[in-house]
Length: 356
Image 1 (cartoon, one colour):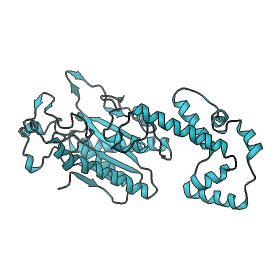
Image 2 (tube, rainbow, N blue to C red):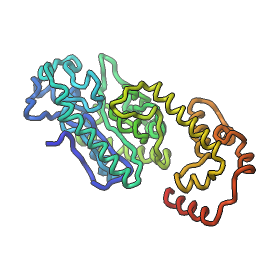
Image 3 (tube, rainbow, N blue to C red):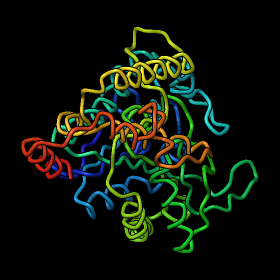
Image 4 (cartoon, one colour):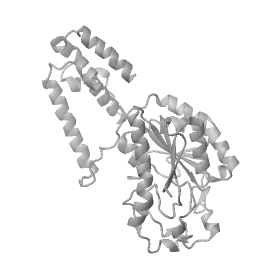
């Protein structure tokens, strides 16, 4: 049996729902991991209510969902393969006898890798169809933790890409939810599910946490999905047309060892080289860049300005573009821009229709 469930249509596009802790089931070969049935019905084994909400939202959107088939106690699919907590020997005070001598490498190959390969395959399918899907991960959390009553009803977890998280925070609050921003957990766990499939692909993504007392029954979970649907609609509309956007240094092949700071420096060097090349090649017209590659010098300047704005540095449109042009954009146009030919204009109009 597969390590995951692929739920929903095979041809849905625009959204992918994932549920890393959907199930408390265990493969027959692993028995009950030495735990009582009562313990396997608690939060240590799965995220209560998350699977029902995930399937209901997938149905509402006609979107695919990838759900874990086995318990998080077998292996935690929201952890990177290098995370020492990927197979827990102690969970919320309960010893997991069946994990004492766990063959972690075997479990990764048998359960973890296929699950993440399924998510990658769904992303690849949608990208091949020219869609840029938003990834939405559904989880749930306990009402209390170590005698602390958690006040949040919903938590929105995110890293550096807030284009979906921020409007969701606002929309949940407007709908009357007590919503936590990166509560009750932080959303910056390197190599977790959203980091791997969202951040590293530049896709819009978010993790939604629901308090378990609000989704404990099938009826409650379906009601929660119905409440979330218009809120998610609002946030997706506010986000606008999805695009690829990298907020962390690009991934490198697995056999290359390189820290994030070094990757960031290399990317900056590559950007400077590109800008220098474009300054030198004044014969290359912006309309040709747009027709062939879908971007031009103006785009680079605008992206620079947007990145500066995210750091609290305000640049005007012309200031951002001057960094790329090496002079005022109006001066570059006077010196180097030629009048577009009818052929260039026709190609530009065709490209705009294709990418709009």
